[in-house]
Image (cartoon, rainbow, N blue to C red; front, side, top):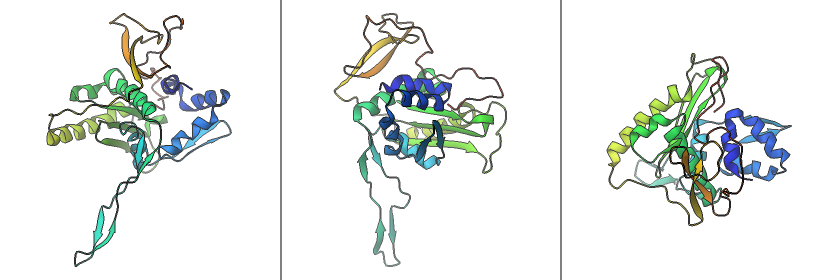
Length: 260
């Protein structure tokens, strides 16, 4: 299954995406969420999930880390009064998804910060990628993003389920906080040398029409997308125009925010 169209279709609400996936008999792929560390269930054709900010941020860290998940931990070490080591936690790497799949996801999420709902992050002038999130009735606002070295998640909401207020989307409520954090991080780290997302050897880049996904030479309409070699679109295949592949969300009525 080509994951890119399904990622783009999340703007139409995620349950529909999973129903489509099941209809294509690709249920095994639905287990990928568990591989990246998010506890979720697909029950009777419906998507049901609750995840902490730590779980979601940890899951997103798989993408810039070439498909490898590091188990998150909060305590580095515990010493007694004499300085003797009582406990120590170390990184525990585990391959969650293929490196080429992780890079394609990174490139798609890069589009969100360049042309989509998180385009304000482009002002950082730094290689970043991520995704905004807004729950129904504006009860939760999210942004989880990363550069090649760190992944940062921001959630805005109340302990009880109540609205943050009209139009308090992930882009409006959570993204500005994330940008401020990244500004401080970049200032402390320094801009030289600037990190880069490393593409595996089997990744190819192709300019495609943002509406149809077909190869394009139109610089004004084309965007540069990453594909696993052999999966890139062919110029002899005619595609119907569709939503732009830029991570942007469709416009929703004020009282029906989208699950981005």
